[in-house]
Length: 400
Image (cartoon, rainbow, N blue to C red; front, side, top):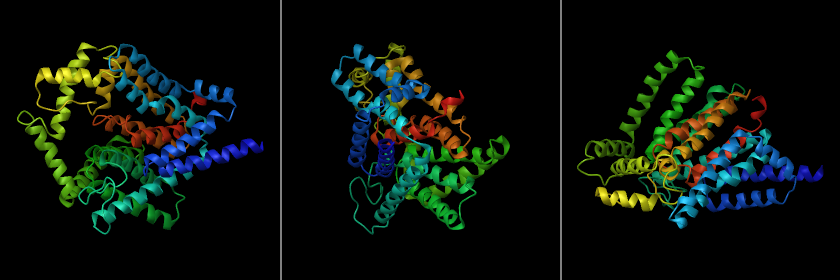
């Protein structure tokens, strides 16, 4: 009894620490992960752990998805790159099942608080850099103040953090007036921060998040939700466009890149379009099982050279769906989508509105943002996805 209590308490503090360090530091988060994994491996009770894992359709989907990557090594020529992909995605093989077996619902609110507090610190640093009150450090510049990670990862994580805070503002009737004020203020300052940083994918994710939140607020009444969306989303967009030079520049560049694509493919959007066109040729040649886990770079180089596109070769197509289709074909894509299917299905089994709403929102937002990059390969975004999945879908399978 005492040993179990001490172990649970240790897991609790490790999970809270991981939630706090998740958006701040790769090294710090990895240290906590190592502690969790080692403790889990040597803490015994393996039959219970195995039963929890094997009984969860979500975890089985995650393990199958990773297992297909292992299987894809059989028809991979570039084993070295294949092992890099396996290393990047090990969260789906080990960390998600481990976190799933140690999380408890009573830890979740504290973990959310720790995560949002870390985002608050990040936001403060971002504003201090933007106002030139401190010298930019690590990844940050005055024009693009994202100190602890690149804007590619920061803005999607910020979008989900804004959702967590806004949900409390709109739905938590137990908030005191003081907390309501600070949560509302925090929502506004984070939203502004979204548009003084340069992550366009995260900004699209932000608008998708607001749309989902509006539907949830109106209890999925289509007419009210639709009218609210067509008023609120354009208003925020045009306000940000007029007020933020960086956001205006990024939007203008995106439009220009699309319009002038045939004249200049070597732009941010132009490269992505070329990646998609070249990758589609690889998909058509290997539709069912793909080219293998490690062969995207080498196979893409052949197509890119043959097409003389004028763009650099790529190690991934900056689109998670395209990457999985090239690597593992239609079987791989179905396997990946099954993870999101079970997340959405399991979220409806919760009687807690916050868990139900957040459990639906997390996969929907990732389904959107993965159109723009391989967000299940990046450290920060993948860890956030896995960490919150371990809480949001725990003990939901019992009502199947």
